[in-house]
Image (tube, rainbow over the protein chains, first blue to last red):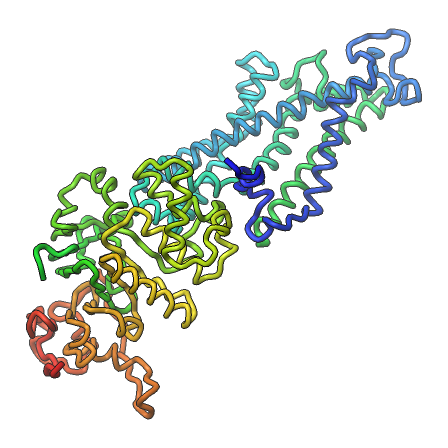
Length: 290
Length: 326
């Protein structure tokens, strides 16, 4: 196997989009968004290595301290270091959303490809079923599930994944319909390739760009949904911090004038969503602009 | 003619099901191709030529089915096989070259993988054998410096080279029949000629039977040994190429030939055919060309025309042109 390594990854259309293969230039939006998002992720996961205060240690003698050199983001209503809580709070907010979006992506991809490759009648039935699922409002569904399932990162990942796949499934199905009439797919069918083989070999990789773009937007969406749930007290349960939970807590304490308890989690959520939308939009531009 | 011909299609009938009724889209298509033979299937858009090919390739779209007749490959009627048996056999018997060489290759796979994909599936080749086979095939179809180009992607090839790669792909399992559905339409004139010459060489060297589908008669005049003209799902004329080009007997064939510009004889008016071909859901009774035919007579509108002529040239017409010596 004398193949150079890049060949093995040549299918990654992100790095090799047709003519862009040999001279990949980063899309400015993608680069900016990615840098922002990585900075946030580094803040959440690497930050605690440098700023070692505990997010749980309660200090009754320093409640509601505004940001200062000693407490960079101030302290909260129990005197806990808000910087530490912001760092640890980023982990579930980002982590659950990312993994949840992967779950949604896998389900959506599977459902969409199955539907697209099914005989027309079954395909139609599957799509109508999808319409029915799409008609259910996500947040209401989440509140319903949250009421009957014990809440933890794992159950949240599954819940978020389970409610956010239908959009992707529909996109994938439509892409499959377009791609399965391509001559190269017909050629493969002509010499006897079965449906499963076509799906694995030819269609899956054709789905890659659209799925990546969609997954990016889904992560942003899930961060917001998760923040909304935490805000309502249905997400990550205290005392474990999460950005949505911190924001909810802060807004309850708004009357104390502790602006930092609202501003920082709000900005963190905003930046996370903004960065992902930049990445998604940049990829979409590249995808459609070709 | 010795023994069973390589490909024999008899009374092929393709129907569409619509609102509980079946409509014949292609009817009574019969032809034979010997090993090394090249049959040109000619007709307007929508006359059923591509569907005839799709039936041979097992690629009929949903809702259409072969409803009668036989497709014999080396004596075996493939319509009697189960779909799975036919699917397994297909790659080894029939190869296909499509119209658009850009769409015929997967943009995200290096070409060598695509060229031998079918062979890998059929013969379970390992990687080294597959690469060797890919190289062999690419050299066969005349891709220059094939060894250096194995790992290239389709976008790195010109249109003509892509079509050569697509032909290599079709030949990977050593099929006996190659169905080429307008393989040169998307190419410029010079490349068209090169691809035609390549197909011609392959059939002569390897005894490949070629079904060449086109709407351009001038393209095949040089290489075809048989010509079959279709109109509205039926064969209207079927002849040895030499006879056909000496003088087609069906008014529709005449009209097709009359629409080709000629360099050698200037000042000849190009003729066109008034109107459009009928939709398969409203074929007229009698001869389907009757509403547009300049030579129409009374029986044309009532009865299907009988074959006129002999084995070497046969027109399905009530009032064919006289046979030219040829």
